[in-house]
Each structure stands twice: as structure tokens, then as C-alpha cells.
Length: 151
Image (cartoon, rainbow, N blue to C red; front, side, top):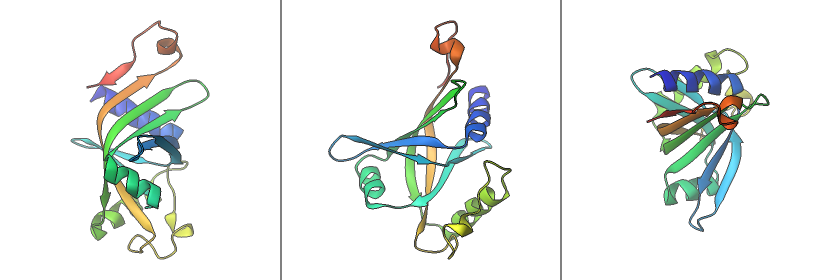
């Protein structure tokens, strides 16, 4: 759990990440998103987003994505994940409140973007289940130490 804990701390400090998916044309597409991670008995990520035609098509083709965090000091956190859309109203409400109650800059009040709230048609929820984590920094990039990785 050491790598998972460090991953969450780093991801929540950096906040925004590039999320890449691959579509039926086998070409990647990336966008900047704002995942929130929970580490209890397992690591789970959540993204409140719009289910755009590109995201829906890509995840229907391949339900995997990569979240890549980077900050100017070259601390990097990468999570390769299985992703699935969640329609359950109770889960959507709970995650909406997790974002709302998280400290700045991680916290976010989605009411300004989705005024109908978590039960509306526009906001969608992605559940991320990581199967690989990798943490690097200046020392690992220079070859002076090994990156932290899981599994």
C-alpha cells in the first residue's frame, strides 16, 4: 500500500492530469481531467465528466485509460486503469459530495458546471480501477534510483 498511498498524495497535490484513451481507429486521444482518488481497502478513482461521444466510443472500444500527472519539479504519477461508467444515483451523489468536501485545490463544486446536480443527464461518473501505478521524480528520470511501481 506504500505506492498507492504515495500515488494518492502526489495526484491530489498535482490535481489535474492528462487522461488518454484509445478508440476504434487505434489512435490515442487525451484530455485534461480532475480525478479524485480513494484509498480504503483498494484504490479507486472517480471522475465527474461529460460522457462525450469520443469518450463513450473510446471506452466502449477499450475500457482502459491512463492518468498521467506531472508537475514542474518533475514529480510524475501515472495510473493505468480499467474505467467504467457509473449510473447509480447514490454513488454519483456520494462522489459529488467527496469532491465538494475535499480541501482546495482538489475540492470542486460541480454545481457551477452542472446546475441540475449529480442526478442530471449531463454529468457522468467514471470509476477508475488501477492495475498499474508508476511514480517517478528527477532522481528516477536521471537513473539514480528506480521508480516506485505497483504491482
